[in-house]
Length: 354
Image (cartoon, rainbow, N blue to C red; front, side, top):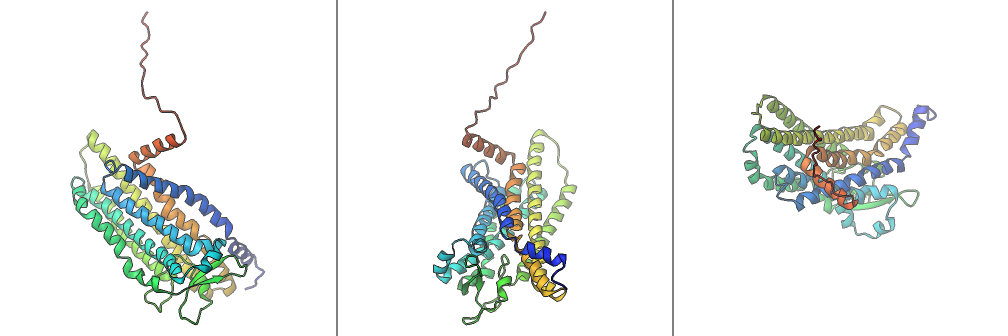
């Protein structure tokens, strides 16, 4: 394939476009993270109002998402835009391994928390009256398992040798997992850029396919729970009253919220599959130079896809799903912006009769 074709020129331009996608991602992730943290603070501040097991599971996932975002910034994002190179060069290797561990570990925690949220919504449909009594005994065990189980796949990351590969511009850099003490395979400079790539053992290096497989497992599990929820929802008949209508509206919105956040997981799954194909399979089908440009183009969208699927979607959707959360956030904004209090006093005007 000729390197002068318009397709090659297009992907050559897109592959070098690193800053614009990161700027767009920054514009998305900053307000989304602020909102996410604010919602978390509201839940902790008003524990009695948000005592539902759903909000406890939501808080657990929020914490994992924020810590995972911090890990991604430390492990890959700062390097891609050339931040703090001099500091990174002075850090001991164990700190670099911890950055990688945070990225991989909290991704798994977030996926597990998503599954528990969907299970919570399914039980709310199956046992609408007593599901809270069930989760009152289970919610902390669910959170503990969500944070412990991923350690079985990620604990060894802290023992890996991580090296810093400085790019030709002497500003941007990439953290690479060192396979052997005396050999760094240059080919890994592309592979290791992928998010949340996991290792089966100390000799098995980062592989985007494994990350995609984990995403696929989460997606299949979430899809099965969603289908079960839809089936139960259609079969359930609720006696209408003012109280049950209000509660049903809240439960329905929280269920829809959980399902829509699942689509964020689905978006990331598709992205990881495309990333794997671009990194490993595409070069066998088309010109290797073009395949490399396509891979870099796909990877440039990593921050954008991640921030939309794991931060923006769950943060903003909760404002719609929970009227109580919406009310607290609105009051907080009014206080911060020094807006006048609303006058709820109604005045009835009775026209004078002739």
